[in-house]
Image (cartoon, rainbow, N blue to C red; front, side, top):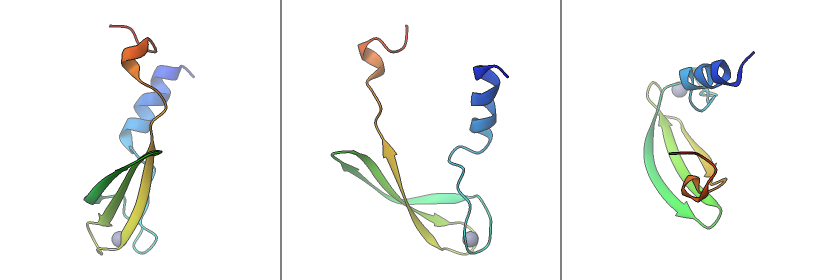
Length: 69
Ligand SMILES: [Zn+2]
């Protein structure tokens, strides 16, 4: 119910990714490329080696007051 428990659940599976080939959720990063809109990563399944591309979007800068301390 609380936002904190939600974030803990998310931490359990950080990306919500699932290999379409074998269904496993373990990926390693093949390479990372910063782009204007965020960060693009190519990941590969640890089990079958299938590659997927993910994009991380930068939502804000925490040093500008979104977060304390
Ligand atoms: Zn796989």
